[in-house]
Image 1 (cartoon, rainbow, N blue to C red):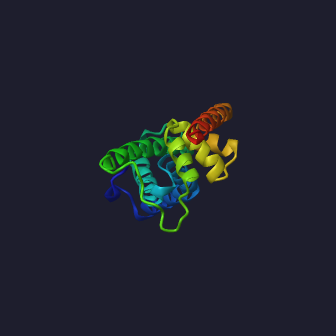
Image 2: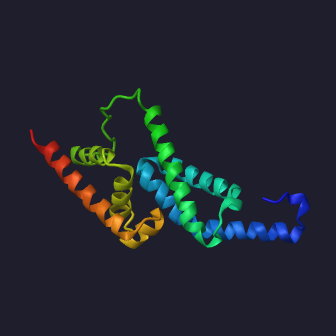
Image 3: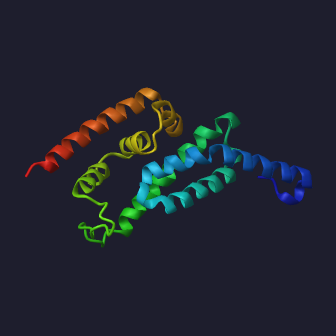
Length: 175
């Protein structure tokens, strides 16, 4: 980035306006990507990660060759940062028991816990595709755009994830 002292007031203001426009245009996609990787229980942390992604993206904007590819580029940064943060979160909670306290609202049924555990065992892409498709209601095309992957890859990931989930849930339900 240019040193703000070397820019005139209009040029700096214009750049800030451009950054704001990029942020507003891509915030939803970036946040959905991060949330799909981290999971709903980390919503607050996902917002922090999404903001960090934009800071990192704006700092590295000079490295982007094709400005028209900003959306795909920033979503890839989001994907990597979310995976990194998720891995760190796993290490943070290693000392906790795998048995959870019952949800005081009574919402955490045994079935929901089985689904959560089965989802945790999926790969990052598969879990994200399932989360985006079923929880966030995104279409195949929207998921493909958010993850910067071909639609066929997303369809394959969803199919593979459904098969794995069905097997694991069937196995978990047997006494």
